[in-house]
Image (cartoon, rainbow, N blue to C red; front, side):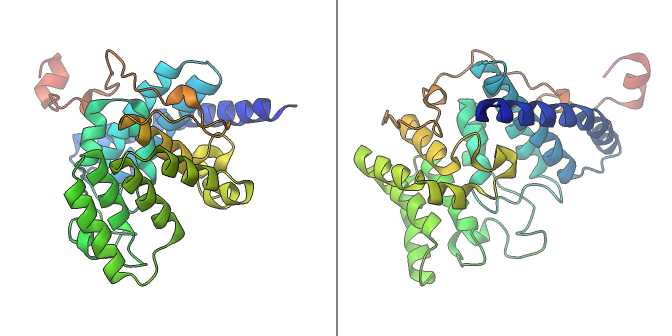
Length: 285
């Protein structure tokens, strides 16, 4: 059996698993919403299911538009989880790959300005906003702030974050050097620098090391996480680089937003209001 067929089988199996879980989790989620006892972790679990749906739509159904739709829903759920305990802590910028690939200006803007009530690893202070200029090897949230600044095209803010990190951390992790290198290259419109960093990350040993913990993305079997994110960021900033490697699917790089994105869940619609008891009883809000 070919590698592509193996991946399709894994995706199909995961999708079936999450379809069953989504039914149960959605019921639990609506119960917690009704009782005003939100649990951010449930939003996150459901979000993962829609990421898998996106992969299935793209890899099995050959439907890139549907990938964008499901990544949009997954990203909205992540955003919502930030409002409640046990939700997304913005510990790293890794989850930003899904809103970025959705091509939705709305959700990309939300992620560019996203905040969270959740502390690092559940209980580590300071708050997310305070962590912006308190970088350390144990607190990588400044990396998320840096990407947010890039998404907002706030290059002054990005430079302050980068300068503070260089001042307060004796030696930045290699992944941070790559991230800052790409962001700098985007600012300076340096295509060659971006391509050089991406090609380094695509070397088999480097790719394996950098993708082993991305279980939701099949640990590098589908794509190479950072090269995909960096290539997409380049395209978003008018630098239409071409990467000749199957681990960077170029069909996902052109910026082509859908004409309409569906919230899928009524409670993700910003205009939605929970129904009163009488509303639920008689079908009125």
